[in-house]
Length: 174
Figure 1 (cartoon, rainbow, N blue to C red):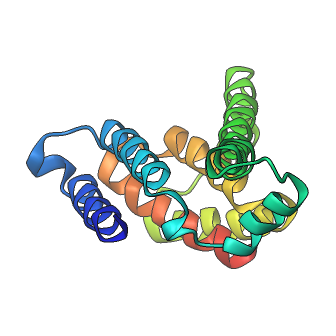
Figure 2: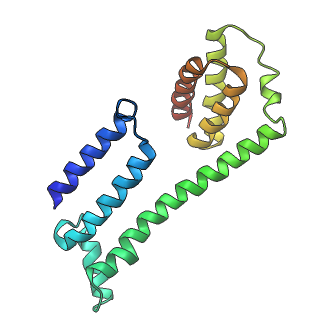
Figure 3: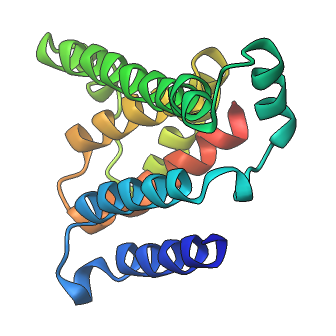
């Protein structure tokens, strides 16, 4: 079962990477892959536990507990909690960015950037991103700066390049 999980993961990851040639939605593939992998993990039982000590601690505290109880009360709940944290954080950060944008909050910055020189603009945006990421976390800084770039740069491919520089600057600064 362990080998099957690895093979299915690699096939799913390949399908996600080849989204455009295969003409499939990577989000749907990722969700389907997650469900299949969790089902295979549940069906395999105790044979492929990553951290058996955690399972045995659970059994010591709950003598009548089974693998299924541990899986539903500890492992699955822990993973769903981590995923929920990320989703709620992103929703909150994106809501703040959209509210700021809706009330012209980015005009303060975009009105002050007068340069038409792309090299100068990339230095300005990277500089702002670098120092903003030390005050905010990297993900929020990236969301804010990408929203700012949408106001400054119309060309999609050019915005991708600037977005890459924003990600690098945010990770360097934060």
